[in-house]
Length: 176
Length: 176
Length: 176
Image (cartoon, rainbow over all chains, first blue to last red; front, side):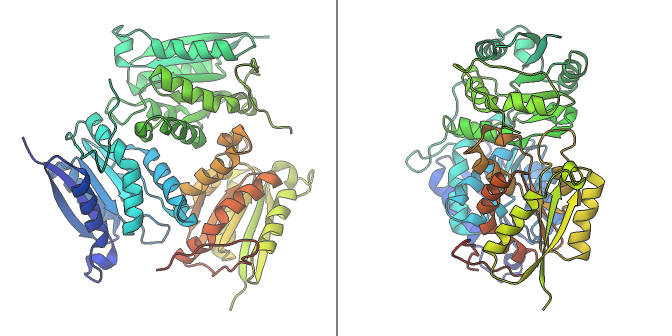
């Protein structure tokens, strides 16, 4: 059996120039290591806020690397260089608006500026792509909220079977 | 006065081949019979998960049968053959994102996988189209949540005047 | 320093013909006068429910008048002549779905027909455009809910720096 691959992309001009440590990407990796009980491998990238570069990276991780899940961090706000949702929408075959709605809802409990996030999710072939915010604290709040639905979503699009350590993350698969 | 018509479409490969009973469509009919106090007639169809066939059925029920409301069940998930939202968006003139948002919100109280539903609603001429999930229990939860707004929506697009038995379903029409 | 400009557009066939007083526009102006502590100037318009005219007005206020914020009232429902969201989407470079989601959520506490509102928000250059409903009571409920995020949003797109009287409106700017 092939090893399960998960893509982690930190979308950030400054991190891609090495001006910042990649704290967002590391936070995603830390959470997935804590939650997942099945063997998996991270496919990692730091890319600047350039839509064509991000699209290229998403396509590569989905089509060539066969990642079952790609998580992006950053680039979801209203600023001119925030283009992560645009890239995600461009490469996705189906959009899943419920992810963005729930993540904004959860973030609204902490900050009123949560409504400024345009984060979304979509599927491309057997890959689920999920946008997260750029701040480690918000990354955790958002990923924790939507993760219970992620393994079943990947089942539905024919991706790898993710299993979790229920002590840290309880996922839900409806009985058929 | 012409009789009020409501379209009910069960979108399902297996039901359309007769492998399943049409429980979703029957649940919609049961609820509408319980709630509506005005005379009405169901226009009924079971179609496979094929976007062109579903679009054709939606257009026929809206433009030829003059249904004031069309309710679909099933085909709203992320799987490859789930195309109900795509067909709905393609034939609608105006989308009403509030329906999907509220239905996902309500379903989230029961299952975390509610965010995987891409169900939406839209108008075409004097017809309101609403997507529901495929499971009878979720159908009831979702339709119960949004129905109070449906008769007024149909008023606004110039469709039939729906009246309900307030004991079972209380609808809301704002005073002008 | 140039004076801060805020556009207020009442979108209404009847108000544009003088059949109604412009109560919605006045309510927006009253709230902004109460909340904002920085000097600002209203750029005011009443336009009929015609998408090309509304687009023209939005573009003029954004590109020529350099309004940092444009607030529209009315025209967000499902009726044939409700075209405010369409005009907003057509002139916006980035859509901010979180605004519509939160405003519908807040309005749902008062009326089940809140889901019929298609109100949205978007950015065009350094201008934020926000759609509000047409009824003064709902205008207040919606604008009050989203306003805490508006000044920071305008900061992010490079618009004017809005300051408020914290007694009446507390805004939020995250620490960088």
